[in-house]
Length: 258
Image 1 (cartoon, rainbow, N blue to C red):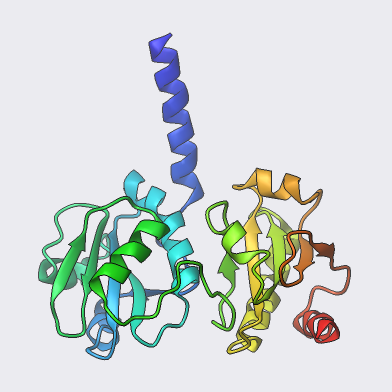
Image 2: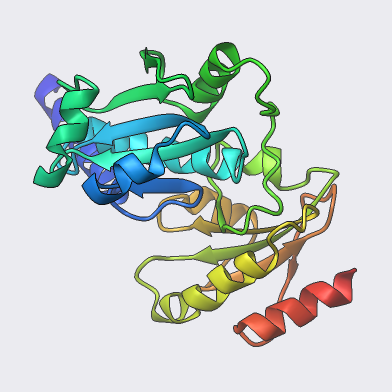
């Protein structure tokens, strides 16, 4: 019986590891390489860095939360969120500079050059608290102000309630599955829509992976992909969008809601 439970737990962990890939693009997160590291990590901003190995299970597990953090911080004039792939040989200099010996490792690099390693729970909430403690004067609200970043906000059970239904912004949500061909086809138009909304603080362009978060899809009556819903300010109930899946049609729909 004990062995059976262990096998089940191991299978569940394996499924989790496959679901999140730290090497993939994340909204609000800068992927740093040897060529961009010295150029990107400058004294103009503080940086919170995620050093990871793509093959490391713990790195993969942290990737979801790191993506959530990127969406929460967004375009902040004082803080940038970055990640470094330790499997790339060209990044060896950066690993040596920060004394990286295990994965994942999270380090706050301040503008003055000082470094502080994070050792708490690997959650967006814990990282936000860490930032607040270490960076006095940096405006980071407890609840994410996600509008106007120019990025698609990645939703999960951890940030759904903070973003959807907030009184200061409406949310346009794409419910998708990674294997869905129609979802892949419209991905570029959805990202362009988010870029077009940059600096529009009361509109959030978001998406949720229903293959990973099946409960969210079920709660909102999603039966096929992609499903697109509009959640007005202060409302937890969305209405279906039935127009064309192209940027100009999305924009016209939003304009009609103003």
